[in-house]
Image: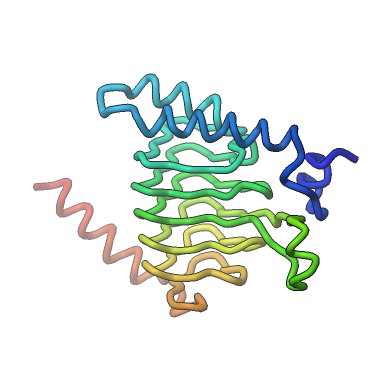
Length: 201
């Protein structure tokens, strides 16, 4: 197997490999181009993101600055929104559904390193995928760790460090992140009512 094949399959791999280094260089150059755009460069931003990401749905909005390792391991659905200073270390696959919102300074880390210091010193590493389902809102300055799966409709409070899977339809907060409560029909009724009042006004 090539080092890229090992990386994509979740095995230990050497990131110093020439092929992987070339992919990272490409991604960093594209990120630099993206981060130098202005608000008047919307079409150019769309073009760069489409070239950088492995999959992009409709109406993708990523505010600079944005940084990633490879780009091709990032797959986002429709109406994806990432606020300022998003970092995605996409050693493993990052799969994001529709209508997902990331607050400022959200970091998604799929990269892992050996716990043994001698093995870690060789530079070898591994990746574990992150999955974020539809309609998830992740608050500012959250960190999503390798291997985490976040269920649909859930909300992650600002500053959370997510180290384990989060089920669907909950509010989760803290470090380490834990479920605070389930979302309920009362939440839906409250916000639907506010929305109707706003619409009438």
